[in-house]
Image 1: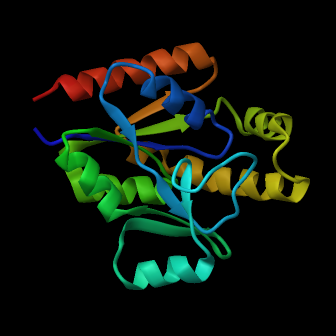
Image 2: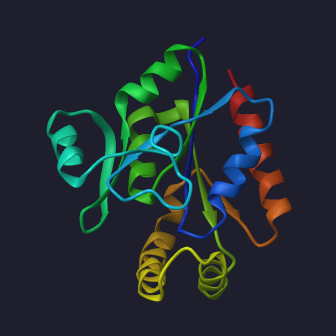
Length: 189
């Protein structure tokens, strides 16, 4: 039986990655779709593990070749995208594929796969809480944080386009809600 798709989108700092990592530890046959990006690795990130790291020119060449299911230039020369081959390989094996993508990419994947996909938007309790999370994680310069906040305000407008919105005010509650809706989706015929 072919697998299903779980799409997660959220503003940076909403807790999306933490929730996805929690879900990957559950017995749901979930396999992370590794996205491609043209940004540099952060911290201990490795190519082919967290992302496929490409130069902006390599990324544009793969776009021209039609290799992406979806892609977006999120910031100038900072592309993110989902390789068709990565998704189709997993689905053909019967795996359930989980995505961590920006809001535009999430909407595009949902449109492409329809009812075979569940789209989940992780919403921070407020923009102020989001700013605090971004500052506390200590990975970005102040100007990058300001850029992420501006982007977050835009992205929050997409919440209504997703099948489910999970407000991450208390992490454990957000994880349990996400687990519940995904389990129900995967159990449907």
